[in-house]
Structure formats: structure tokens, C-alpha cells
Image (tube, rainbow, N blue to C red; front, top):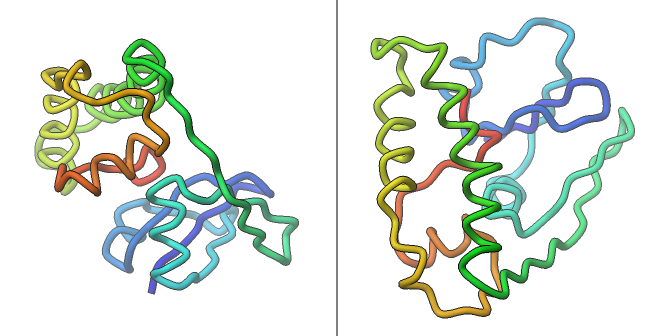
Length: 142
């Protein structure tokens, strides 16, 4: 059982299971919706965009195209690396997710983006998944 967590109608976080959801320490103001593992993976891999009207969750196909290294790096540095940095700056090494986020952060810092064949027609997350690179979607980083 996976979860989408909304703050109002905006997607706030995603969680693959109860353990990940419990790490978020959510209060009653968040709307937690149970989804299938398939839907979760589509969101986690950035294959689908989620919209929510307070009642119905709608999934829309997401199209990615990174024409060159510069465009991919811009996405990864702004969306992914900054989420890792924000988390690492306010959490202790004793936090359950700390080592996982730190390892991912270090991977990003040392990744050779020039090793990818461009144009890349998939998300960074899907690229990682296809190449057995352990990754976190920015919304999984508590």
C-alpha cells in the first residue's frame, strides 16, 4: 500500500509504504490518499503528474526531454540536489532517512552527466531506475 499526501489540493509528499509515511510525522491537516503500487511507481518515476480536487486523484502522462547535459543537470541540481541539501541541513545523522539521503546527494555530486547519451527522453528518476541507480524522488525526501 502506497500513499500520496496532499496539502490542500497540492501534492506534498509520496510514500511507498506505512514505514515511509510514518517518518513524515504528519498532522491532521494533510490529506493522505492510499494508491496502488503501480500508481506510486508512475509518480515516483515521474511518468505521471498528479492532480487532486479534494475527492478525485487524476494522473496525466508526463513527457520528458532533456536535449543536452546542461538541461538535465539544471533539473537535477534544482529539484533533486536542493531537496537533499534542505533535508541534510535540518536533520541529524540519527534520523532514519539521513544516510539514504546523504548517499543519494553524494551520488548526484559525483555523477558524470556527460556519460548519458542525449537527447534523453525520460525523467532523471526513470533513467536511474533503468540503470539500477538507487534514487529518491524529491517528494520522498522527508
